[in-house]
Image (cartoon, rainbow, N blue to C red; front, side, top):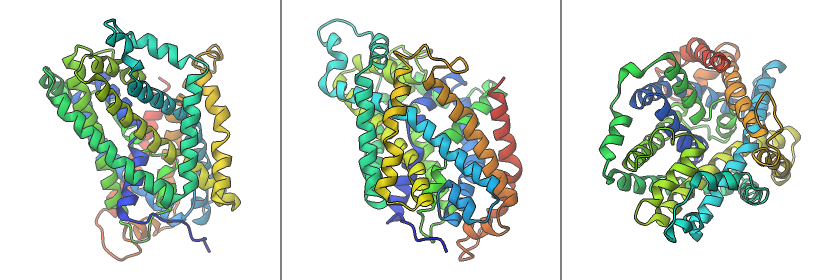
Amino acid sequence: MVAKKAQFASKIGLIAATVGSAVGLGNIWRFPAEVQSNGGAAFLIVYLVCVLILGIPVMVSEFALGRAGHSDSVGAFKNLGAAKGWWAIGGLAILASYLILCFYMVVAGWSFEYLWQSVSGSLYESAVEGGTVNFYDKMDEYIKGPVSPLLNTYAMIFINLVVLIAGVRSGIERISNIMMPILFGILIIFIFESLSLPKAAEGLAFFLEPDFSQITPSVFLNALGQAFFSLSLGMGILITYSSYFPSNTRLVRTAVTVASLDMIVALMMGLIIFPAVTSFGLSGEGLRGATLVFITLPEVFSQMALTRFWSILFFLLLTVAALTSTISIAEVSVAFVRDRFGMARWKACLIVILPLLFFSTVCSLSLGQWSEIRIAGFNIFDFLDNLATNIMLPVVSIFMCVYMGWFAPGDLLSQQLTNNGTFRTRLYKPILFIIRFVAPVLIAIVLVSYFF
């Protein structure tokens, strides 16, 4: 008999925690960069379709696996009687999530540093004195430094440790209930300010008025990849979190809610970014991942009234997103260690988190003092990023779909979708069809396209 596990205390807390696991750095900096480089509104439409038609069914299948298996990503397969080969897929999800955590903690530390520099005013001190700030040099100097990036990374590791030791309800759920309203509140404030800028209409046109001639196979593949990444599919997060779902949780409704809120955050970021960078003539090459967040946007804020206020607000937003992301990713490994070895939660948290003091240090230094160390042409930071997000996550997602579509106990998916027959749904057959025939093929195409 499966041991009783912790559960989320309320539906609001369940949604907040699950949304927090999906809404993270991918929405804040990766989504605008993908929109910019893939045709603007055309990419947005394809992305929304991918989330609705493919992302939600795959999310539902991961929810079903986690709640039915009532354990971590490996234990879920084991508890459902799956052959040991399937356990390896759960193990691969855990490994991928931990590799992501190693470099995500570094990025979370950057967010924390820029929040502190915004509060202290040091980020813009040259501009205040009448000079100009070269934000590219400022970022380059910071991330290559041997001390400050590590101290901020360690601070974020410590915060994660405190929240995770507190547990599912008192830690993860409580912090999510606080941080998700803060995140949405900050986004709303930014939207009003961004839409009041002089060239807001021009930026909105790029973001919201599609040119369907821009839709190409590569745009579709990038949109599908962004959809799966932003929903945290294949990381083991959704399997782990759904093992904490009460038995009366409606999985399809929860998946639709989580995916919808995730899409709303992405849309809100577009409404903020494109009017702002267009108004200050910073569109184009400025929208590229870390460049957007740590170079382009500080340049925007430096040209706005109340520079420090907007900078503090944005980097608070980014830090909140980083925390919700890292906490949820770390919980995947914590659940695995705790379930597999039957140890106290605080011990599992220490076993998972403390090694990051070494691994994240390596990732951080690989951008500076150890940048000459190369693996397949990448520094260590970029190698882990490419290996985990572009290879391991798609492989996990493909086999998760194959298992739930073809090898899971025959009535598992239908029983989970109907809460063991307590209500009816017409979505079982469409979801089963997608995870059997559509999602694995398309994810495989995304995976193969990475190598060409």
